Amino acid sequence: MRRTLQLAGVGTVAGLFSGLFGVGGGVVIVPLLALAMDFPTRVAAATSLAAIAVVAAAAGGLQAAYGNADVGEAALVGLPAVVGVVAGTALQQRLATRTLRLAFAALLVVVAATLIF
Amino acid sequence: MHHVVPLMLVGAGAGLIAGLFGVGGGILFVPALVVFADLGQLRAEATSLLAIVPVAAVGAWRQHRYGNLRLRAGLLVGALAIGGGVAGVTIANAVPERGLEYGFAALLLFTAFQVTRDELEQDDDGRTVGGEPR
Image 1 (cartoon, one colour):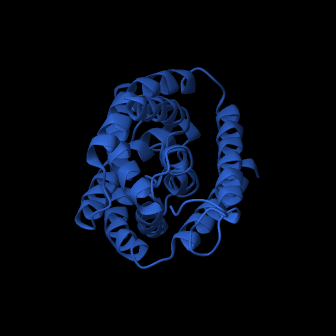
Image 2 (cartoon, one colour):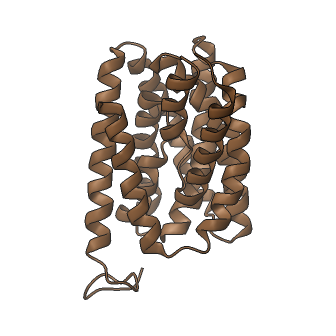
C-alpha cells in the first residue's frame, strides 16, 4: 500500500512536469523510481517508458485539442525515433549500470545548457 | 527554415537515448523541433508529446521482452501522471515561454546533480558503500 502511494506520488509529480515542459516525464520518473524507490536502473528505465506512453498520449491529446501539436512534424521525428528506441533498449542491456547512470546525468546537464543559452 | 534530414537524424538519436535511459525523447525532440522545424517552444512541446507516444510504447514492449518491465507500476505512474499533466498543460498555456525554458533547465540540472551524487556514493559493483546491493 505504501509503495502504491509512492508510485502514485511519482506519477503525479511526473505528470505536472510532463505537461509543463513537453517531455514524457522520464527525466523525473527514472530518477524517482531509481533513487526514491530503489528500482534497478534498467527496471526504472523500462517502467518509465510504459508510464510515458500513457501520459504522453493523454497530454499530447490535450495539446492537440488546444491546436498546439503538428502531426506531420511529430511523425518526422517520431518514426525514426521508434527505430532508435529498439536499438537503444538493445544497447542498454549490454552497458554497465554505472555507465548508464553517469551518462544520463551528463545528458541532463547538456540539455539544460542548451535551454539556458 | 525546415530541415527534413536533420529532424529525422535527431529523431533517431532521440529514440536511441529514449531506449538507453528510459526517457521519452522529448529532451531532444523539443530543441530539434525549435531549431529545424521553426516551431515555437509551446508548439514544439505539444508536437514532441505526440512523437513520444509510439517511441515509449515500442520501448516498453522491447523492455518487456528483456524482462525489465514492471507493467503495473508503469501504468499506475502513467495514469496518475495524467492528472498532473492536465495541470501542467494548463500552466504551460498561461505563462511566458522563456519562463518554461528556464524552469525546464533548472529541473534538468537538479536531476543531474541527484543522479551523479547517488552514483558516486556507490562502488563499481553498484553497491552502496557499506550497504545492500542494488
